[in-house]
Length: 510
View 1: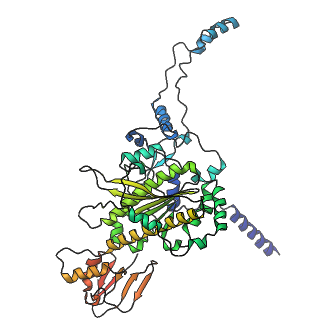
View 2: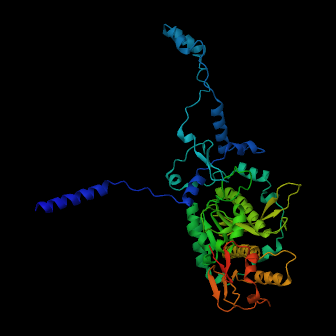
View 3: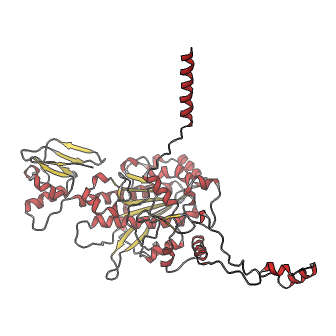
């Protein structure tokens, strides 16, 4: 009996100990830390120092107030203080006369600084390196509504204001009204091309009425995300390598490092395993957006959601900023391996902005510097604008343009990635090697395995990003791959993850 009571008491003690053990704190992921730093970001002081003109807006006034507080010094008290004067007043009549003459001298209170508070010193993230610096308060008034506390995205207009736009213009990132137009005819034709499948049959008159009710009833960005965006994206989301709300913490700053890091609502890019490791490393600060592995690289399609019309201007500014980031990445891919950069004036990057019921699509491209030693210029042009709730035909036209634009962006980045992956030989290379390089460049296969004793097969990446293996090595464009020396394969592919041993070339995809 005593043993039974003792065991019960021991079990109770163990249960009590387990109840009072502190809960372990969950470790935040890199993406969560980047998002927190993004929402806490504010303009550093040098941003305003370098602006050609500062507008009157809450963030600028906030910075001015911060600088005034820093410059203030504690004034010395006057010789004849108010307290000594009041002690000489003996009756009420003297006090009345004293008040009529202006009252006490309050010079010792004028410009007296407020004591600093912790809320006045938030952190600011350097967009280029991800480091944190103290740079003043983020807003004139702290958000107080419960919705803002629960959903930081409600503050999304944030730094995207007139000063942001002027900063971009000062660095040759032009708004649509000041941009040069690229070749638009092919883009417009591609966006207007009929889609495979009949959208007319998919979107009935009743479906359009339901869509319009959802659009007109949308009061926030969450409503637009839930009720409007799925209609635009459709069912072919698996065909794209996409990331959402990812902070581009690894990208080199587009201007002088004083802007917030890019963070598109949605972007499409290239599956990183389809791009050679050497390219990813050499162009890492331009084509690899995030420190978090596995996210798409070479972004060239961006989707920004304004939610309501009063945030449309901020969404267009984000599209202008992110589109320039994408245009720079595509230009780097286009010029990879070339001695001097080439600017052909073509648009290979696109962005779409949705403001409740208005869909706008923009094309982005880069032109050569206008002065010796200058920087290239970035341009943004509208290629489509649709009022989705106008009628059924307008909705179908907008969906067609959006999906065709997304497909066009994918074709361009896939072509550039394939061309960059192609082997590069010196001009004096033997004709057989040049033929091999040309055959590889024209082949849909990404990786080849050859055996000196005989063909061992081809390993490549299919359209879905998976591995495909062929047991029989076939001739490609008249060139017999089994005659290719395996030791030349590493020279052709220029990949660090390729090794040759015992006459067998092996590629490891990381």
